[in-house]
Length: 437
Ligand code: SF4
Image (cartoon, rainbow, N blue to C red; front, side):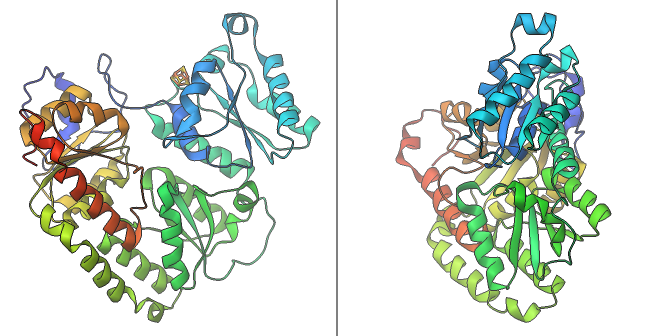
């Protein structure tokens, strides 16, 4: 597509109207994109494991950067590396930091040691130091190999976290038969109560959630996750690899599902009921859908025909795009910071031809899209928020900050919030706003 902003020729293949955009490639030098680093990707996966101690082996800035995940602050410790450590080595400092962390948090059931760019450059044997500390302290000390520079985006940090989970936790809880009608939800982060809403629906099917990786995972829960009857992959980019590995190691089948939007939620619940041979337990679905639609109807009337642009982290693209279409809105562009081919294929199947799919967009490109498509709403991470506001475009942050968006009740929350944001009187005051309100 032609843009009026200066664009490097290589960026063109990352924007497609018909096929799939190029993806999973390093950001082009000189382009300041919205991606985070590999360390942050690992933190995205592991930060919520609250009974573990999290130690960032690197300069204090890396610890500060990665302590806030999904807008929530989690406790982190840091080795606070400085110049001297880079020159003379930091192995002894790391061993001392692990000891001190365990002394300060004796209830910790494990220690995650995250490596950063500085630690990666020194090239010390962090794995050996962790192994020694584990032997001395009697608590699992797990290296997470995630220097910021060692991958294309935070997506590679998810992979590093998966390796740590598989090598040190999942399946360590002993053998035993699969636990009847139990599931793990992989790539579910329990944002604003999403997991509670999903669990409520699963309970109506008589299905128990064993472990949600890692919105509500504990070290003990991870250890018995291999006994689930089924793995549900909610976020493909963070859950798919784990599901594939668990299928190979423990024989657990998996299904890709989504609990965003009425149709996706209903399809997910039917899939699960069919898998556990209890389709009769899903007879209440139509009633729930009807009730949610009725509650959302005042908002749907206000949203019909409105345009929306989506720019997410990665794999919620497809399912959220469908949810916005259920709101009656037209998705005018849809993109992600680090989506993979499967994520874009899912989005294309939900959106059809002609909707612009864009990979790893930078701020000037997004600004151009807002001028060009004049959406009534931009949905994205907090980095895009102020640009949208300055251009007079209502903005919805996702992952959300207020209420669950998952499940049938979540759909009503989404409809209400979108209608409220778009209809806010303030936008009438925004001169030259691309959004007529
Ligand atoms: S890119 Fe490297 S230096 Fe920057 S926050 Fe990530 S790990 Fe730390």
